[in-house]
Length: 384
Image (cartoon, rainbow, N blue to C red; front, side, top):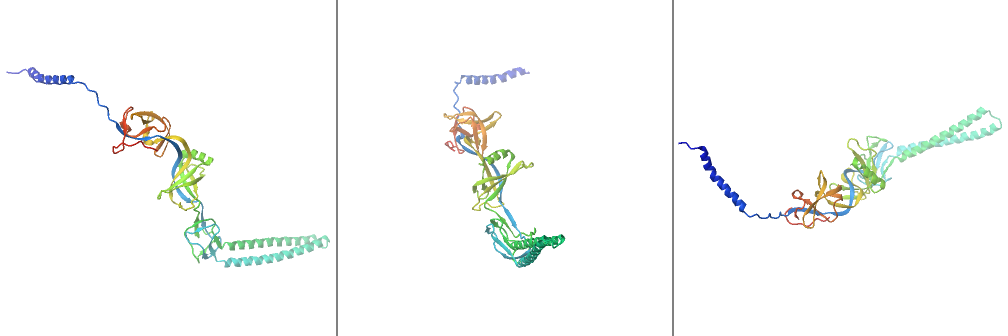
């Protein structure tokens, strides 16, 4: 005998529907209770402060000697004596090298002898001219003969001047046998020694190179966008420069901006600047790289918060402000600029107000917060 499938379905569904009805009835009969308050969200905070913040342009520069001179000989000769040691500090005019003087001394003697001969001839020619002037007045000699003696006297005078110049030149060349420091600074390697032959202005040989270390220069480049602000500060006379050595971390704050290049490099968009430091302790050394900060002004009385407190969106910049009851308020702010890890605000916040610096992703306006360290321990608000 066959069983109707519809009867089997009703027999299976009846107990299931009854159980579901009992669950619904139990749920409807349970008394309703109020939700527990949400726990405080752990966040990190900082206090907004009002302070003067310098406006700075940061870059990387190279220390270079303010002046560099490659010392060469101006006359041919043999090095007779070297009067300095490598690395010595020298002053302008100090004797560095002496060449053999004897060939040039002989040349000076010859020039002086020629001068004496020319002077005697000039005196004789002038005496003859004086005598013939008297005869010319008396019409005893012809005009042609008188003009010849005038010419002889002028020629002898010109020859005398040439011999005087030759003596001066010989004295000058003899003075070049004493090679002196043209500037004050520090000497480099000594490339030639006693007995070496030197040629006048020989480009293949340099006797020694002198670098001026005090004062010293730092050359660096800044972006084109900073040029107008730097030029305005330079024109007003309050553009200052400080550098920090990369290895030691020592900072030198007594630099002055001395030069702004007259063009912007079109390939890099950078402009070259040069600052000068006294460097009396010779701490800065040519060729070293340093971090350069150019201060072009000060934002007085700015409201400052950590940059991590400021959130940016399509609607603008906002911060979460912690109210007295430990709840937060989402407040729009106006950002002036950033300075390192801090942000300067022009509007929207007052000094002394507490802002959230970490944990904003878990917050909504009105949420209750608790300032905690990363380990979970409560912390006091940060002070500047």
